[in-house]
Image (cartoon, rainbow, N blue to C red; front, side, top):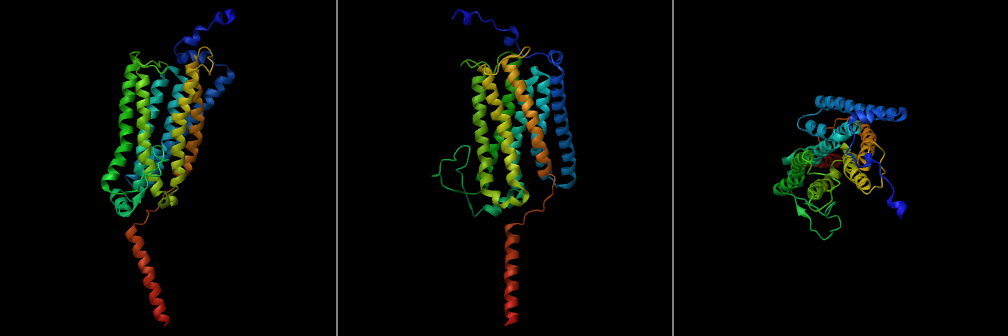
Length: 329
């Protein structure tokens, strides 16, 4: 018992994240090569994204090209911010919130993309005005099978858009507020007391996240069968994967660091080392997803036929078959 009480803790394990120059000084050859390789991955991700933006800008019409630029930029932007956070540990708070704010806009843009691929708001409403949408989808109501199907209307579509848009707006506002409080010493992720600001802001952001994912899932579950020709399912899967890696994975690592499961390694405290590991993993994961995105979005697609055009084609085929039968007779 006495031996356990006499254990000394390295003072570096209780310090704030080190400066960038301190990180560079303590790197050995292997660590330096690792940092260079990860930096190279982040740079390649950014360059591929810029080249893809030029391709999308030249080959796709407005406003679809703007939406695609936002969505395809999720992985490269997160990789770039993670690279900054890896080299400058004191800036992790700012880099993480920048990535999260960007992805909050991407959530809304995914919903907008599905509507634009169906011809825009007016064509979307014309196509589905006579259909009912199922709303028992994740992450809110996937187990609520008793929920009735609802008729698609302009009002419902407005509320679905608003549900996704609120996250992009409120997440940015709360991130700016968190940074302001952090610079004043009032926001600390390790402060789990009821009087701390982090314990109030972060759960509220979690609620906003779930509320914004639900409208996107509703639209996807009801229109994905119409958009399989433009690879909507793999695009949506990549978007969901980025969500899990950038939000859930980071949260799990931060919790492990706060509990001391991730040991400190001077000059990194346990929390700073957890952040560093999270940034390094994020760079590698986003690099792979950027390569996949390059293949998914490196194509142009013809506009989907409207319901009216589809009916006209069907009527023309029926008329042609009738004329052939009459001619044979």
